[in-house]
Length: 233
Ligand SMILES: Nc1ncnc2c1ncn2[C@@H]1O[C@H](COP(=O)(O)OP(=O)(O)O)[C@@H](O)[C@H]1O
Ligand SMILES: [Mg+2]
Image 1 (tube, rainbow, N blue to C red):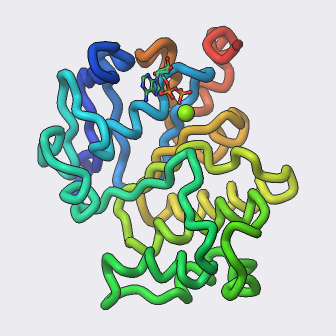
Image 2: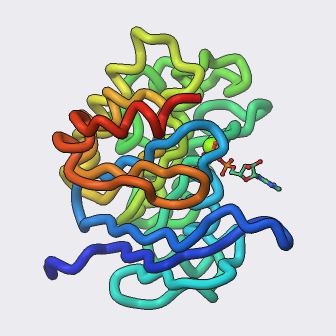
């Protein structure tokens, strides 16, 4: 296995119509381990992930996945190459059961995965298989969304605010699972819980108004006097 990063983003610019949101964003993600993307509301974190997955066409720059340029490829191509995404908004089907939601996750690779993989990860979901996903708690919904994404066997999983709307007692459980997952695959985690993000991630990028304002090893970013300024509302 090479030491080259799995994901290499260089001078990426993107936006909506003519309104540019991302300016020259550069970042990398290693083959295993987690990187955190921090920044206040509106900094461009979700726009960055949406561009990486191919929902937004970049205005400029490059996105290399496993050494291959994919900025002009569609979402399906990127997913097939190993990109997974747990978006910020509800990523589950509320009217379907937990089991049906998980089954959707296995569709891409039915020959290699079983639901057990997800249930091993979040055993709580096993007690809820027949329940409508719309009746789950905030934390359980996030667990389901993460589980479904994992069943697609991604090599790199991007998570947009995986602990948003999650009861504090469950946040630690999700953090612990992400830490475990980061030993096997690559994670890109957008988080408002800065302490948690810096604990799970080895490296952090702090975004400000669509640019990377600060980045470095999590241990250094934690003590950087500028961090508070970039995160302040
Ligand atoms: N669909 C959209 N159309 C136009 N502008 C958008 C859209 N989504 C987000 N924006 C704008 O892009 C900027 C960055 O938003 P976003 O990427 O959601 O930030 P974050 O995830 O860091 O809170 C904000 O100014 C926001 O208003
Ligand atoms: Mg966002």
